[in-house]
Amino acid sequence: MKRIMIIAGGEWQIPVIRKAKQLGLFVINTNLYPQSLGFNDADVGLVADVLDKEQNLAYAKKWNVDAVITDQSDIAVPTVAYVAEHMQLKGIGTAVANLFTNKSLMRSFCVKHDFPSPRFKLCNEFKDAIAFLNECNFPLVVKPPANQSSRGVLKVTNMHELEHAYTSAMHHSKDETVLIEEFIGGVELTIDGVQLNAGEHYSLATSTKTHYAHNEMIANQLWFSQEHPDIDFDALHDQHNQMVKLMGLPFGLTHAEYKYHAGKFHLVEIAARGGGTKISSDIVPLMSGIDSNELLIRMALGERIKEIHPEARKITSVLDFFEFSPGKVKTIHGIEQASALSGVISIGLNIVEGDIIEEVSDDRSRHGYIIAYAENTESLKSLLQKIHQTVQITYE
Image 1 (cartoon, rainbow, N blue to C red):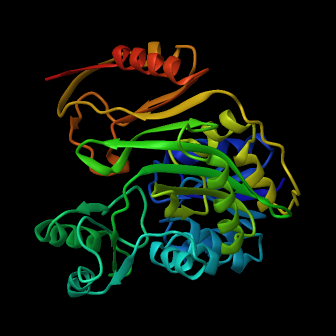
Image 2: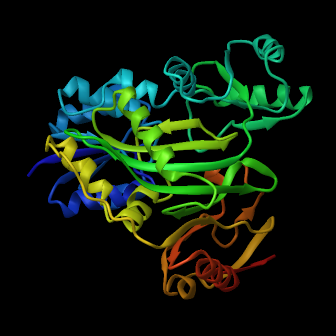
């Protein structure tokens, strides 16, 4: 039996762990916490920080693994590449992993290859951020160059906000640098796809985003469809597929975010893993008929895949995030009833009775999610309304 190591073992890695088991593999899962959810489905659960390359490599050697992967975890991508290189397994290489996880490197790549991208500056000190104001006025976006879940990412409109945002971004930065860039307006879009190891990159699921009213850096809905009345999805896919090819990704899943502004698609960021909150595991197959997790596993094991045949399914799907009022939770009702509604794929809450609900501050602090689909947008909106009416919270 072949052995696969999956680095990161939270809720969003459970689907790829289960897929590996379904394919008959022995699964070794590593994650920081002894009670990690992924350990319940893996054959072996081992405690290791996903950022600890040497500890993960030591586990890989001990178990003599045949493949190493991650999904829906940006910070695990460089560790996976490092372990694969040292074990002489199929991987994307540390240089490519860095390009796909460091936003400053992404920005420089776009400038070099003439892809639309916001103006930016990598700052070592706050005075570098001040200097950037000579090139670009407010509003600005301040963020750590390499992190995930929108932690430390803030839009700023004045000097006081800039000082606060810089401190926050530095707190979340792994290398004591901060990326500052111009804020690009327009429609925000996401693309999830797959790069075949013997073929092309395929864009499989595309969404338009909306955001929380109190923080437009955090998405509260992603609407997936095959077309948009005002945006040429085919042109976006052509640009995106070309960019992935130039970035040199040998194989794997991709997740990217763009802003459509002034007739151009500006890259926000791109990752060498599938979209989180079950986008790659649930929404991509729903929209395209392609099991992206299975493709990732097969390619990591060395199988060459030349082409796939996605279906353009004529449905609309949504990743919707709950937003409850702040307060201490007394009771939660309606999850089972809402989950049983036709068109609902998955519902999950990040709160339990007794928790104190606070305002959403980053992706990880969102209160819960809904994945659902319908034949058209209006039907899906009606389904969402019914779900939100069914799931109810009372407060102490």
